[in-house]
Image (tube, rainbow, N blue to C red; front, side):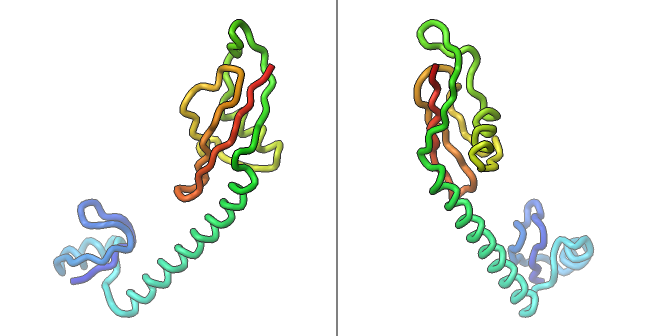
Length: 146
């Protein structure tokens, strides 16, 4: 019996996979618990249309995020801080502070999208990776000055 999975099933497959299972397992577990539907030409057409619809929505999202990327890529965000000896900053610049500055500029970016690989605790220019989507990544410059 062929089944189209509606949800991920551990050990069997992921959502939208077409798998072969025994009749009892398919009817009594997968279909009964709404984890899958019987594979037919009609259900295959519905699956294909849903996959295409999701792909189009993701492509539109990526296009919108690329517009944000074009505006922000390699942009400088300035911070004025107090520094001590050897230009060592008291504390450090956090992802929340960066997000707050981006909001002031008109960009609502989640702080989870910022990938800071080192602490920003010295005077100078620091690169921060922004990952809006797995296909949309870019750097911004954090400029820390006195």
